[in-house]
Length: 368
Ligand code: UD2
Ligand code: MN
Image 1 (cartoon, rainbow, N blue to C red):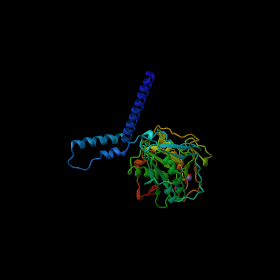
Image 2: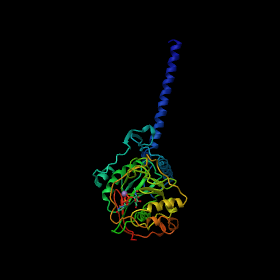
Image 3: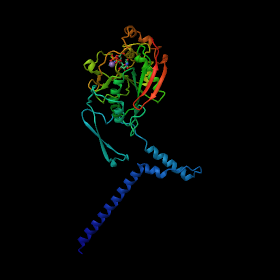
Image 4: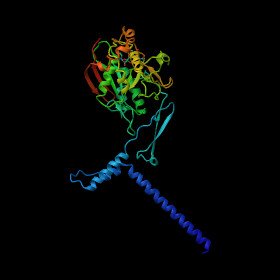
């Protein structure tokens, strides 16, 4: 064989050996990643319940703890990837948390949201469409949400509105990747309605369930038209329903704080909660606005575009006539807010029902 062909054979041989070696390294690395990212490793390491534990089992346990920490969930992204406008979003799902192993893609269609109030929905249909909603809420399974939100709805005799609210809101709240639960604060009896006091009750009762750090206060008849309007909390008290069909998609006045708002636990306590003495319709939202401003806070709002929403058309309910004292009351917020609020709240819980789509708290708030 000529010298040159021996030389090229050796070169080819070396090249093949290198390819084999690299393939071997690649397979080994993949295998290590695979084992590290599945429960298989922890299954291998699981320790039988034996009272006479040896040093070896102690070592195994510490290895297992370490692996457990490695597998801990990451914080959810600041902006949920599931939100958007007029597009279909496809997300790569990596069941083994190794990027190389993203085996399937799931697509969801997001805003603009079509919100129609003529549709007939039943609670059963809402339950079937939201199988992951339990005990009135949901939390992401693949990340940890920073927003632990109690959504509080003042309520009495608005079952048709509630069905629509649940139908539209549960899917949106899940797409927003919130750790949330919905509370319906139902005023017992037929005396004059008191929206703000019901919300104070909601705040107090919800905190008995979970360490919420954020509270959203929503009318039962308002639905956002853009899923990027986050039902969470911000560095200032938030007004969410800023651009409503009822007001031709404008703010009716600059200080307007009605409809849907949110306050962190800290912000809520800073203003001593909401007033308890606004009986009947109106004024309580302006009082809450005043409280925020008097405590040196400003109001944060989404843009007019993102803050678009619709309110179900309705007549004024029985026992919710306009509060004749409201104009005079809102001129005294600065004085009254120190003694009228969460620090003076009294009520009697009549009944609590933890249902799949919401928790219902029926409460006796008294009368004027
Ligand atoms: C406006 C405000 C609302 C509040 C109210 C004055 C908007 C969009 N909303 O609502 O936030 O400031 O004025 O109090 O500007 N409710 C019942 N049953 C009743 C009565 C009231 O469930 O019998 C609840 C329900 O959640 C309702 C909310 O209270 O959405 C506000 O009452 P409303 O819808 O009758 O008043 P509205 O639309 O003028
Ligand atoms: Mn309304």
